[in-house]
Length: 226
Image (cartoon, rainbow, N blue to C red; front, side, top):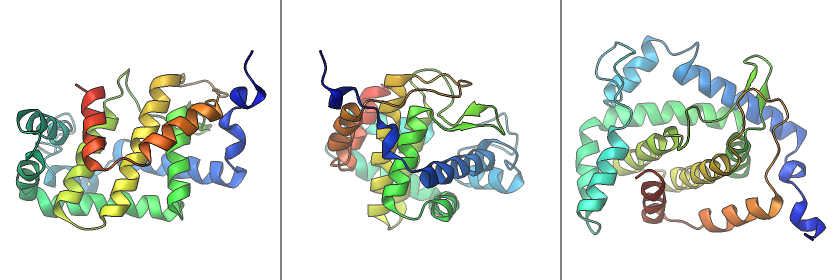
């Protein structure tokens, strides 16, 4: 029989205030990049990073950063970061602008690294049901939820062309935690009361992922998105 500690869920780790902040953040973030606000301005941001090949919204190129990173790491594990950096430097201005756009939304709603971490944990668990959408906020698509790999590729491009490495390293760690949570729980999209993960399982993910450097994060994402 499992102890009471083992079966305790993570639900009591998140304050009511934080749950509200996280829901509003993901609502704004989703609308900005794939919803109601995905307009000419955002298309230009994507286009300047080569994440779109034209202003036609049907012609995306969202996988190229992660695919290039993965291919270079497999070909030359010792020197792949330099070749990746050389390639993404071609789009430096666009990458910086899109990254600043993303960070502006994050920092507007989430005021500390811990709040950002918790917002990503809630996202991965699929427990942020939003009445305005009648769905939960989580990564779209079926397993393996390729949006996580795409975002990792973009984060790696961002740190290759600029500073703020600590900020983006932490964000990448939270991204991996969110992926692992969603992969384990596979929360239904329209269920209003998806279960939280067990505390011990969340703690295990945190204790490993929060210590990873970028090379280890590359290894993990490439392992899961081979």
